Length: 344
Image 1 (tube, rainbow, N blue to C red):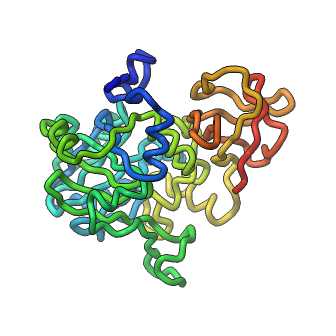
Image 2 (cartoon, rainbow, N blue to C red):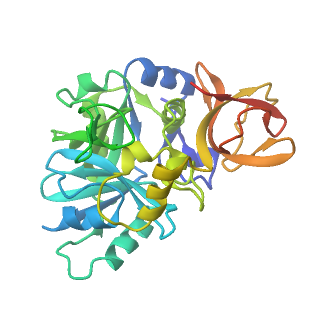
């Protein structure tokens, strides 16, 4: 099997340390879209937060309602700046003794520094656990056949909300099912199932699962198709949660005060955010290389947004997630290519 690492293609890539593909990226994409494949995402940073006050403490520091998070539950959270800009994003996994936070490669030290600064006299012991656990992702409709018994991701109404459970509205928050398996902690997420496995046993777990392998290129294509934002790709220093569609997954709109809450509440109650996340389709691009992260999106000679993640999709061709000014709907170009906004 041909294994091509991310750093073999781009030594400066943030995703170095994991396979980009195993020789056939398009076939790997089709596997993730129609069956199930295993993606090595062990370059993600992992933090551990043990301690009896961990739930209430994380609840006060982040955008998510965590004070009632129970064993075998997960969700997502953000840490915001005082002005409400997105600084950190992490997925949460609670096993009854420790809250595990996994985040983007390189983002862990910043998140840990913030948590340590906010400890004071709270009974918590946050630490870097990247050397302890690695993230593997089972992606595709067949993931539930590999790890059966996990419930679909669901949207929970916030306390006091006047609508039925499962009604997808902004006044709700995502909740992920978690359980302990022979491989490690399994967390049901929208794209499949994430496994948090002992890093020393990663290779053995991959072999034991016996699932077809897919590289990060294939994973990113599926992520872009599903319009799932990624910290540092679909965010910049000005991004507020509503602009990158983090609200439903990571922001609870009916909880107590946290840093940056005023901006979240103002946008929610008074109007739309100035920018939005959009899926772009390219037409007539003259190169096989997708545009780089941060490439400007232009309309009538003026920059109206930037490319986050651009990929070549096995069915849709060249597509990209971009952050655009809200009124930028047509007449858009990226370099010499005309792009169209997918409004579906």
